[in-house]
Length: 312
Image (tube, rainbow, N blue to C red):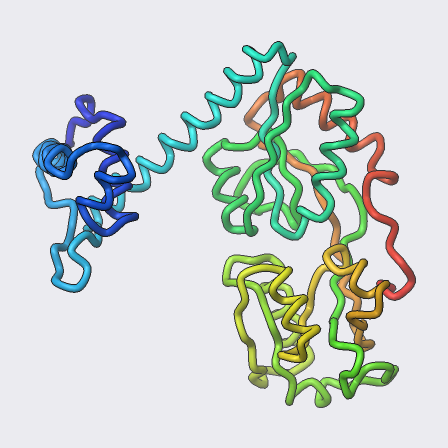
């Protein structure tokens, strides 16, 4: 087994910067050191593990090997842990009574800021750091114990977690106001076959839900799906007429109320899921995190936006 006791954070940071920038000189610029200093750190790291860190291919000379990728993952883990500890120390030095890392799936970013703001009006001594990611990223964060509490849809089956239901989370089908199906109260699956669906990336809970819905109504028929990176991009693209999309109603209440988007009515929609507040069962909550959890659960009916009739 390779002994990594001599491994340093400086070596890991040099590795990460070199991969990110794609060159020794780029890494040196980011780290404010000389290129030879970067080369020395990389060489010492290769000697420590006894294997090459990069594939050394002509087109991408700093593509990590499998061993290099493992060390790169370690570098990211170390930086995340250091940042988290730094947040906690900063909260204590600022005289706060505690700090919380609150992880939320990207769809919940339309809910989370108002929840945090309401909590901090009542408990200004607790510092809350909000971390946003897609379902895969938040799940990996839970696996790594990065969050005190999280908000997401269906809790991951492979993680032992305590969860509390916060309220309804409906998914709807949106289109521009001038869409050919707008106002049609009897839309059939066949009507959607010629449509282009705009969707989030693989790993997104919304993407998985949409694909299951299309599989069910289409009976295995292939729908055109175009991937987009954020809910905001999807909404703007739908308004521009690039396609239609299944999306969380919480993300587009304003656009529908303003008449920039409409909801398409089709049997089986909206798909109503639930929001959950959860934390790992094997991790004891701090007093600050427990206070936050109690606050959200006790006030959940007021903290979640009121859903208009078009959602149901």
